Image (cartoon, rainbow over all chains, first blue to last red; front, side, top):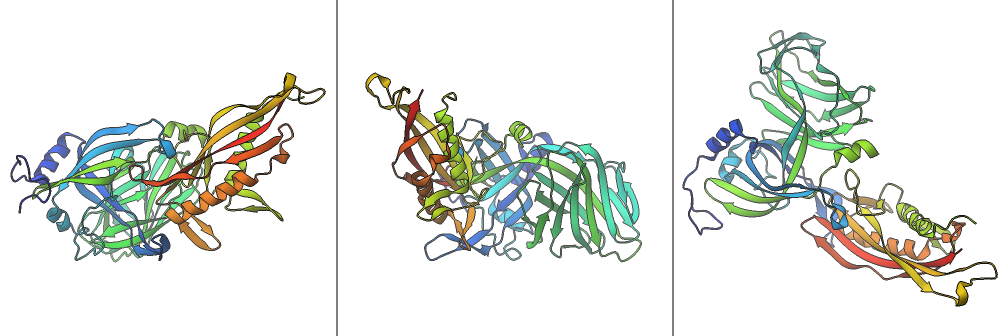
Length: 317
Length: 169
């Protein structure tokens, strides 16, 4: 099937975009996994204005491969009406068929996802602020189990329900606004909560609703780490698990503890693996137009309409 | 006599009133929103991050309104009637909402509510608490350029107003 839009001009032919993404990802940060985000859509009243009644749940799905080509990453000039950091980028993703083959995007699993449309958002990692190391077991602890590392991930061989935690010993993560990690188990684990605790013992608590993680595959969790957020989502196999975020937390205070709490322990061979645990500063690219859609790839023209000025945040708040 | 600082006196009073949506009524005062529902900036925001809904009170001009013979405003006071002009912008993004009489207002409905109650604040701010500045008149021009800006993904509108006061010395 030819391209749907922009059939003029020479086409590069059939591209194995996944291979291109993979090759670029090894060599450059232009290709990375982004998080697809569509905020909750509310029902409208008789006058076309959104109400407070949800119509379509938030979609927040990590691990979408994309190439980001910014034309302007951050413009700090003050704009009329107030947005103080804006930018523009062209984002390449695999074709829609490939995207829908990912379990979270499969419309048989996730009926709310149709395709990437206008004002949907692609959240990219602008900069990793703090990467919790899983190449060794230093500072990792558990109340029921034994922690080992294979150099890439840590494995907690459980002796019961409880927690796995990392003591960060006072790390500055102020600039971070998202938290991401990958988790894998060999049994059906219930992730009851995750917490971030700062050096003043203030705790930000993430509580998923009935999130079970079955044996076998890595689940990527990508959540906001920013004040004012009270709800978010974890998607597994296209099903949304609502996450409530609560707690008094001063983001200017250094991070001290990252901890996951769980239940579901069934026996002595139960293991939990964690890797790629990071607090990162994100840029949310909003889709403003679709430049091209071909068998091989899709090109979106995106803008960023918001941004934080971290030096002012530290000074003013 | 304290040093004349009427421009700051008026600007700060206006920002304080807009922050809580406070305006005068026949029976006293009323508030259209609570402190924290709306963020008021005295210039285009240079803050860490813009918080919507936002009101931006931009001081754009000031100058003489009326002069008197010999600059005399009384037997022992010199001065003139002076004017200060503001542009006031409203910005509402997709996530903005405030609760009015138990109902959640968003987008266009919220913008409409903010515009009318901004007008109420501008027309009925009680400047009598300013001990050093005597406000005489206000001329509010009405909101215009009411629109949605797709590039910035915000609903917006703009008005301007002039306040005149005695610039005594």
